Length: 116
Length: 114
Image (cartoon, rainbow over all chains, first blue to last red; front, side, top):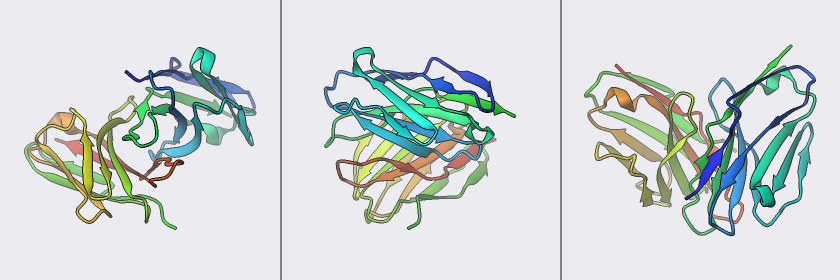
């Protein structure tokens, strides 16, 4: 069975601090895809990144970076120099191989509060 | 290029009434998904369409729930005889049928059953 665990329910930081959101996944598929989405208070889920299981390169996009480690089944998300606008709930999600129903299996989310 | 749209954004109804939600996917996206999200939880998969074919339904989708995508474009989700437990955010997502089939979400429809 597929499962995504985000152990951190809530995180509170002060602006400009770095913060890492953890994501651990379980799957029996050899090919799978991992995602991070942001859900601001407005409620709409915003896609941040997609990573396939064969690509373990870390990725950086501005203040955002992602660390994918198959050995520990983790796909962690770091925000550098956090800003108040980063306050949101962040979800990690997992989907199966291409060709199948690509429904997303979601973690419970981590609520990030960035305080001025 | 517009994103995924959902209507209505909010719906308040009395227990026992029927409600219908609409989702318009990104044009040329042939995959469409419905999810449900309750407070403090991640979204849960409800059903999936590829073009007009409904290919999978979750066990969460009881007999009171039905979804259609008649022409492979917009989709509707109907809940009959609503119950208070149906109160949730109903999310629609669409994706292209390519190797990079990332799902893009609409703003959701928040249902409150009194």
